[in-house]
Amino acid sequence: MKGIGRGATVVASIALVVLMVFVLTPSTAAGASGTASPSASTGEWAYGYLQNYSVGPRYTLSGWTYEGNLVIGYSVILSENQSSTNASVFELTVHRTMGVQFSVKFCSPSCSSPAEYAYLFYHAWETTDSFANLTTAGTVLENGNSSVEAVALVNSSSLLRANLTETSSSVLPSQGGGLVDRSAYLSANVTSLARIAFTPSLGLFPLSFGPNSAGWTSSSAFAASGSVSVSYYHFAEGPLGTSTTSRSLGPYTVAPSGTVTLLGNYTPSQAQVFSGVTYQALHLTIISTTTAFSVREGFILVPAQADLFGSASEPWSGNQSGVSEATMSALDVRPLADGTVNGHLGIGASRWTFASSTANPAEGLLGSSTMIGSSTSPLTATPTATGSQNTVADITVQASPELVTQATTNNQCLLAGLSCPAASGSGTLRNGLVTVGALAVVATIIAALLIVAVAERRRMPPPTYPNARLYPPGADGRATPKPGTPAPPRPEEDPLDHLW
Image 1 (cartoon, rainbow, N blue to C red):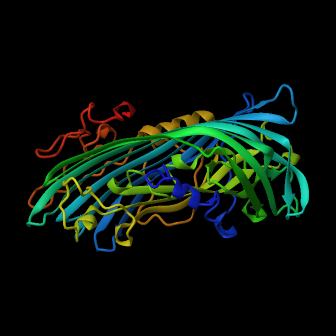
Image 2 (cartoon, one colour):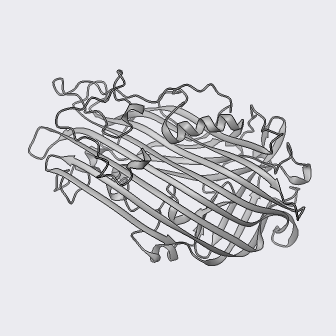
Image 3 (cartoon, rainbow, N blue to C red):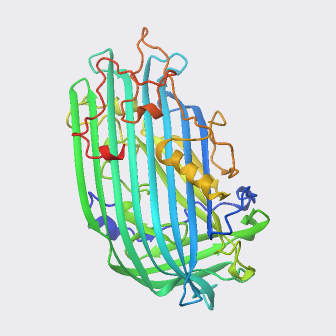
């Protein structure tokens, strides 16, 4: 959630809600062919992206080695209903899921023969259920002066749920010498409900894309209602004992009114081709006087305070080691003037940029005057200082149309780590555009990182989190507690135990 903890000053000081942060060059946006067609008979269709990558080995600024696995993706399931009273109005019902999970081990001097090491597991997900009324009787201004017919957003409502789970275990030096076991557990939950209506309807994109529609704008006033609630729990244990933090924040209300301006453009060379149908890659930016909302897929509006994948600090940021941000760089749309595809609005897919990084726990210890486990010191450093940021991924991915059943299966991976694809690739995960076939074979494999024996047969303790069976630290699939390693939080201690 954004702005909580810093109050209304943060909300008032930010003036831009951006859909497109990374504008891709034509060379990175080569067309991709979809492998599945949407379901035509039900008016329901889907698109998405899911992949499991091997990461590393890489090196931190302090010379440590880190490597692991990254599972990243999103899926969008849509259905369309035509209004029975107005031929130009239609409703979209959308279920959207986005998730990032990575397992990383830090080793010094190397992961083949470490003397000191740390293990981090990070999992963040978001689901949004949205209902939007759109009209084909809207308008936008092409090139700032010519009013043309456009698809426009009349109103929408959205229910968002988001969660972060993070665990870490380490064997690192103590101030008095020797090696000390440390571990921590963090869970956070965000929920929001928001409704918004535009007057006039907010133009999104023209009904047709011609030579003169390379750029367009629209403006609208909005009235909104809704709220955001946040809760989080943090437990850490180190040489000075344990520390526990539990907070429930909100509900916080959304901005009740304001104005927005939309800026849109497209580049024909970035068009995507799915099942022989061409979709233009639209770049959309929304400027708001109140920064009330973040945008998903061009028309799903959620309170910016509830954006777990945004760039602002979270209330629990001082207790976390990993972060993930996501921004949409393009929305793939077939012009309605060219005819509908399988009987529905021509939104075929989208392109998103994900940036994930993590802090090396050892870097949080070095130079610190307090030892981990005290009531005033978190387990690990928040990855804001340059020395604490270690890139897990910086990658732009292109979704493809897929069967609704496949999207549902992919959601199991994004939310619970089930039925994830097998890891692919090795070495460094480079920044760039990545596409994946929608009907790729899905395996029930998730990253399992085994930390080798170090420091005279000492083993790193397994991660201590409630769903450890899904992400076993060893080959036997069991998370056997090590003496001295704290147990997972008891149900009565963790206000978010119902999520597990």
